[in-house]
Length: 193
Image (cartoon, rainbow, N blue to C red; front, side, top):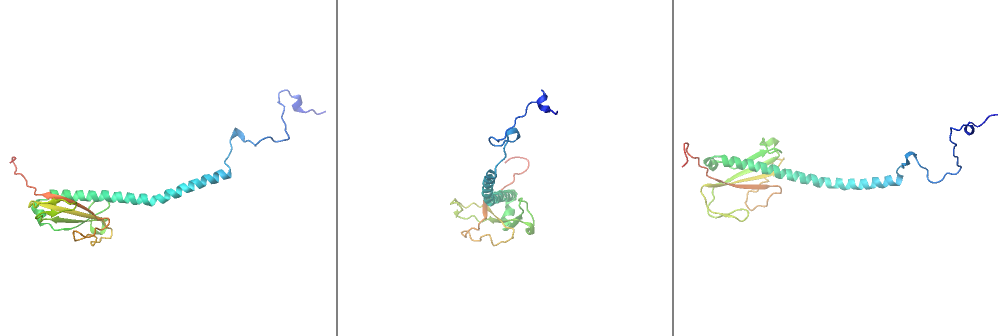
């Protein structure tokens, strides 16, 4: 006679058997996965957010480029005004207007490799009461030169972007910087007068 080993062994717990499954089926540890509907909704929300972000990307890049232009143009103007201030006044009186060329870091380079073009001009004849930009009137001062720098992002190296007439329509992207340079007299060595 063969006996059931489970019934005769006191160390083995009796096994529960049920013919009907009660409730939802549970996985080990009580964890559940995501349903297909939940995954689809999550992907839709993510796609919507990404489309909105990619739509804002060109605007952000344009603002970044514009702020870089302002920064580089200011650096170029500061460099040119500083050079003019350090130049002897008599040299300035004989200097001609002209163009200077700079790269995207504000460093002076040959025309063929430039990104920015600066038109440098000297107004040596400040006679009478002159109307300046911004509505300021300046009296005649023989020892004063108006130094003007016009800078534009110009990778095509065009010179027709700079208006010649004072009241001409300004070119978009053209920034004008103005400084007044006084006569700089050097003191004689050996004492203060």
